[in-house]
Length: 173
Image 1 (cartoon, rainbow, N blue to C red):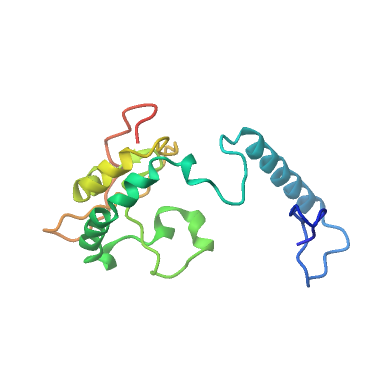
Image 2: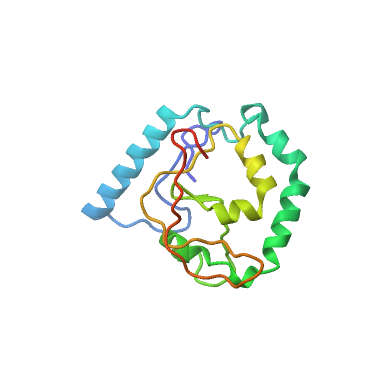
């Protein structure tokens, strides 16, 4: 990384040891301009600024989650008994296909794409209770949902239509 000031790190569009192209093409320049704009916008609108390391005081809910990690882990251990039946992350979000093409990354969402997975919440009620305490935790909004991801202990995982339940409104997690 190239530093403008030895004390202050700065972002660079080139990687040490790799020769840059003579001149990026129009599409690459447009993409880089859009990314730069979005980064500036994120920095401008960020509630917590952009420190390298965030102060734990900025996340007062974290202590409560940490206190209950054993409860979360015990529910996760029950879910993982049937890990092979969980969908791969790339089956739920196509963006993840660039990160993983194997069956090693599984997903068990309580909320995804703005929709609650009530069967998953029912399987992990204490984790759901703990997650509700996270300030600002509300799902991103989207109209699509490719598959419900719960499995009752009495039968194998089945592909299902989108869940009928929707979040209760703004601020609902």
